Image 1: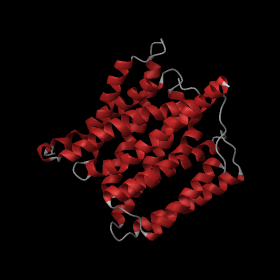
Image 2: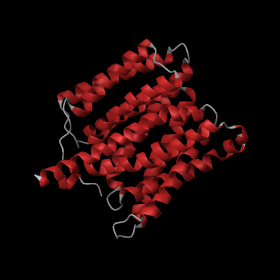
Image 3: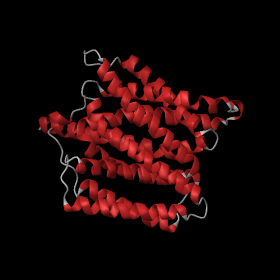
Image 4: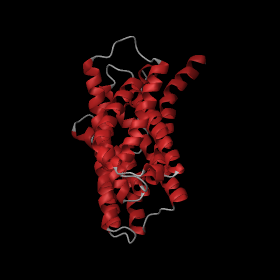
Length: 317
């Protein structure tokens, strides 16, 4: 009996960690939008991930996590390379999109398209089976995405600016899918906290260099206190804590299963955007979002939850 309870806890824990990650990410969209309304998008990205990198470095030193194995230059380079893609490029695109389009759009496009793109790559690479359900889901998702983007272009409140922002969200989703797929390789010789710290630090340094000219023009004394509170939240919650939990989830259950959990994010993100920012979809966008979500769930899950691995294989490093 005790063995059964322990086995269930081991299998369940990665999904609890991933669920916490999705809640933090969902809340991060609307919080980031508040900051982008007051500061240049490149500066916001730097503040978020610069603060996150400092928090992770502190946690790494405080916990002194390690496997007893010295991190090799190759391990460091893999983690830093993941940071270039998953932190630097992703966030330049994401925060640029957030400066043009509502947060509610980003909270739908990024978390829904990321697992779809991840699944599509796994199918093309023959690492997953191309079942009829998956192919149908991808087709439905593609149709929903087209409808959503058509609705973005015709939105009365933003027009072409909103469409441009949504396209940037789509590109950032491509980056995140690639970042997810690289997670297992990055973790091959390094524990999740250290890998996440190195990835975040490398991306934050590049963001700081890129945003330096824009930061020099900011009237920092005029930035409201509530904006700084949001900066602290996105740096610690959706960045430092969430990224560590996400890496642990990938390490435990794999990229396909971790991607399924992304479908929690649009629910949380849409709710936060509507409640705190007063944002909403147009009718066409709402229809497209619904079709996209249905197709994405079908493509990723094939109508059922991913198979769990044996308990020993699921335990995080």
